[in-house]
Structures are given as structure tokens and as C-alpha cells.
Image (cartoon, rainbow, N blue to C red; front, side):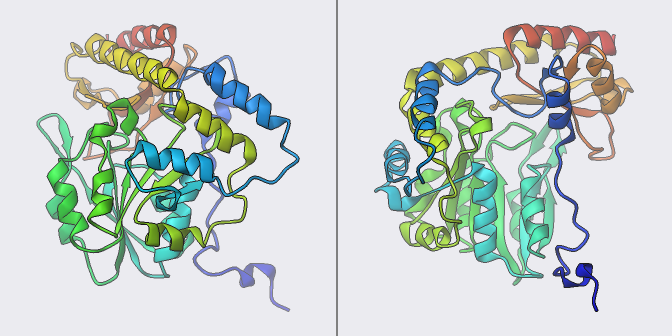
Length: 365
């Protein structure tokens, strides 16, 4: 008799469950300040909380297919209607579903690095091959390299994914470079998880009307502050969205998050307040840390900031440990470009941001 392990498909065998250690730490020790996971420090607005309570009382009922919230999303983005929108249990499920529809074992996904870890996770679980194209680190900036992305394409390339603004560098790719990738005809995912902080005028959603192969993904976890509700969506040509949606699990988005999402999307004042707070605090932190000798601050259009303290002679992991002793969780970054001074901060409350600045300056003093 074969062992149960022998029945697993080879590309799943041995892959561990994904566990986010810093989030586990934050829940185990709630006294620590959470400045590490690109969460929004502000709780859901009163309108969203009203929707949560209202539909919580209807949680005994299965949800519908989300036509109302999908119609609202289409309206916001200047698209024809709900057939242009697929909703998911966070943008993580949206990526998972897209990848499942395009990727076979041994086929390739091109990502631009450093970037969000979900692309690697979903590629690996399907037995795909991840092709990482590094950004260019020059002039104290991480720069997109569209020529290198195009050069990495092979006959096995099935997906190209670019985060815009990029996570963790916080910057946008030049608008004209998106068309160069779109014109390859290869499924092209533009991850716009943080675009609301800069405004939807920075979105590449207009490409959908010209290129069937372009998909825009978004989430309500960031600017809308609903990370715990798990609501994301994809925008695309209706034929493509329709085919990808066929692979969705039935009732993949629950009644409560669906209607909470609609309330958030309709609450323009609530979004504006969160965006203005975030951008004001980003400017404060960037300015407050800009005079540390040998220290590089990457200007961010999102709710996190990337730093390279390699020039100070101190390791990023040591900074993260030092600040955690003072009650704040920041995000370590692996060694990149041969340098170990990297780390990242997520915007917190006004009080938390000032606490963090004080602790960071003490470390580098």
C-alpha cells in the first residue's frame, strides 16, 4: 500500500502552509503597534460598520453573485457593467483564480522584483516556473525595467504581473511602458492594490478597452481599510472576466464583506479622509528621516515606505529588532542588491508614526 504522501501531486508536495509571522505576533501580543503589514490604521467608517451589522443579521443566507457591488465598481472605473468585474475573497483569491485559468505545470510567470509575495505562492502551488526580473537600483531609486521584462518572455510565458505602485518600493511605472507589455498579447496583470492613495487617474484601467489580455486587480484592504473583511476584485474585458469567473468557488465572497464593500465604495468622504491622512503622514515620516547620513528613503505613493540603511553600516534586521523592543513591529526585508540594510514601515496612527520616528532615529544615532 502506498503512503498518503505519494498521492500528492509533485508540485504541491513539500510546500508548507503560508504563515505570516509578523501578523501572528501582532495578534498574540496586541500591545505591540502594528506597522508592518500595509494595513490601514483607521477603523472602518460608521457607514461600513452599519452595513456590517445589518448584513450580519442576514448571515444565515447565502450571498448572491454581487451584481450590485460589481455594478458600482464598474461605474467607478468607467466600464460597461458587472460583466467587467470579478470579485474575490481579497485580491489574493483573485490572483489565485487568474493563475489557475492560464498556468499549466512548467509554464512561466514573469514578475518584477522586489514585489508582493503572492505571485510566487500561487505560481508554485500550480507547478509553474517563476521568472523574476529585478528592478534597477540606481540614483537612490528602484526603477522599473520594461526592456528586461520583455526580454524575459519565452514561448512558455503565460502571465506577466506588475504591481503599480510597486510593493515595496512605492513608485509607479511610466504609463507608456504598460502598452509595450500589453501589446505582447500575453495575459498581463496590473496589481493596483494601492492606487487609491494617489488617485484613480494613476490607474491603467483604460488599457482594458484596447487590450483583451490586460487585467487590473484591486483590493479594499488598503485605502478603504478593510483588510480583515477580505474583498478584492479584477477588472477586464467581459469575455475574459466571464471565463475566469467560471473557475470561482460558488459563494466565494460572503454576504457581510460584499455589502460592507459596497458601503465603503459609496463612502467617498470616508475614503478621502483616509487618503489625506495617509499622504500627510507619509510626507511627515519621509521628511523626519531624510537627514540620517547614509540612509535612503524611497518616496512612496502608498501606505508603506521602504528604506535602505546599508550606508549607515547597520543591518535592517537589527533595526527591526531594536524597534520591536520599544513596542513597534516593522517589516524586515531580505538582502537585496548585495546590501542588508533594507526594511519597511507601514503607516500607523499619528501617535505611532511619531513613536516610530523617535525609535528609528535613536537606532541610527
